[in-house]
Length: 285
Image (cartoon, rainbow, N blue to C red; front, side, top):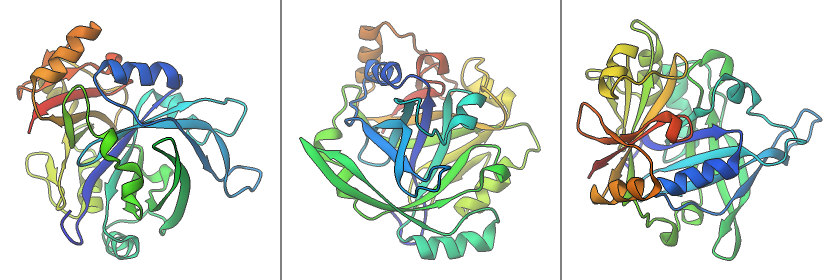
């Protein structure tokens, strides 16, 4: 990751049924980390209490995908408003080297982000758990209709980027691109340029530390992904995963009976209906 620059870290897909969602991603050829319960603030004033949700992550050599779903509906669910909107991609996270420095620069470019917040949780590690520490700079949801943005400083990256978790049947090695869909003239591209600190070139914003954020109109999104429509506007609607051999995802999809298509740029992709609410595309790297 380039010193001082942001890189594409992860996106968070949200589903109502975590078991079904995890099964689907395994069918797509992803190896998933063990389930990890989520914790945080609750309406009763608790600072770190169990939430209704847990997650699984698909870890790559660069970046990862996070799948969040409900496991105990009796507990507080901080993601209710997002799930009420649609199942799919609601979190976009960019990695920074150091949170305080990143926040100072971010605050000069755009309003609506809270100061860094220290977070920690027990993450599955081998046959046990280890403490995972990170600092999050959260966007204020009311100001960002695209979903939740996070700028994250990983303080213990070795806890989640475990070598044993980074070999996938589909050959995934990197998180290459997140694709947003927004109406022409929408402020979405401007917001992303301000968050990332870089200008778009033809709708593509290259992050200094690696990865790309793209903003497409509904017409351009449909043209790229064979007539697909985003679930709502504006939103993050697709991800592109780099693989070491295109024969691997093709074999996984055929074995699972999942239909795939080719996008206008030649990537192999799976529809949002078949991939937990967001298009998942694969391209060689």
